Length: 53
Image 1: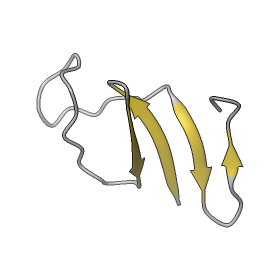
Image 2 (image 1 turned 90 degrees about the vertical axis):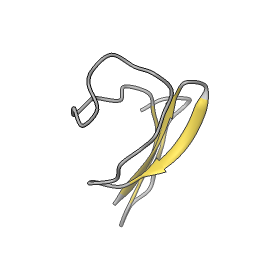
Image 3 (image 1 turned 135 degrees about the vertical axis):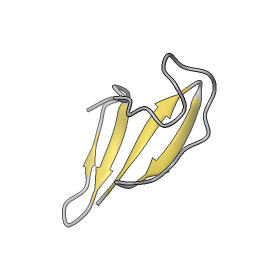
Image 4 (image 1 turned 60 degrees about the vertical axis):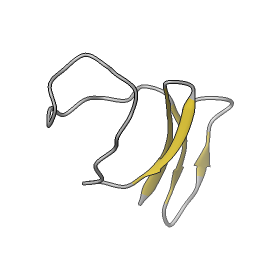
């Protein structure tokens, strides 16, 4: 399963366990953060937001 998220004006295709290098957000290096702008989720069934899920 994967998702397409938006942060810092850019879009990223991510999967569970991925490490991302993104623009500065609150938190320390290695912290888990929640991304609220989910544009698409893929797997057996694809869900596309209009514009967000």
